[in-house]
Length: 192
Image 1: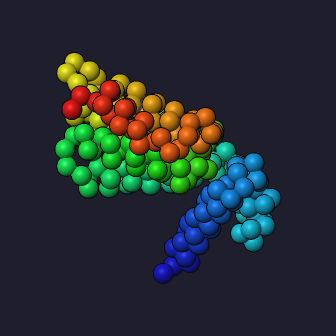
Image 2: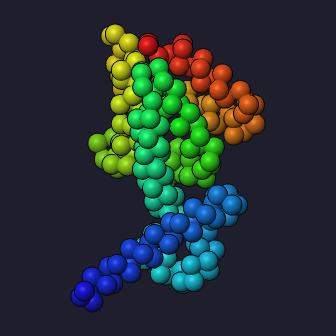
């Protein structure tokens, strides 16, 4: 391995460490606790080293959002692949999405609530964000209904899931009623 390859590998490892540490800190104490100073202390590198990877917290949030979007897509696809039938797939998608949001609140915030400098629904949208949407679309397009644009239907269904996730997390909706809410959403929105 050349010196250049070793340096690139070390740089990639430091970047992964920064993102993992930011994510861990955000999950434990919230995004307000994630500062470049605290990250530098935790990873035992200087702040200039951290800034050589990310220009600031916004880019770190963006990196966590990209990582989380990939994980969300994997979770949705795994859940929908494990069941048969359109209705069961839509219900599995909804439960996987809401479960991801509940288990990873800081990552969910990085993806959907915080400014990570990422463009959504644009030509320059990063691939992990496009893929997370595609994971939803793959299941929802089969239940959108005749004459309904599958993309618009997916956006609407996603908005409903996001609302359920956000309101449940904020304590506005009791979590024990998530199952009945998913059933209602699937029965009323999806054409199965």
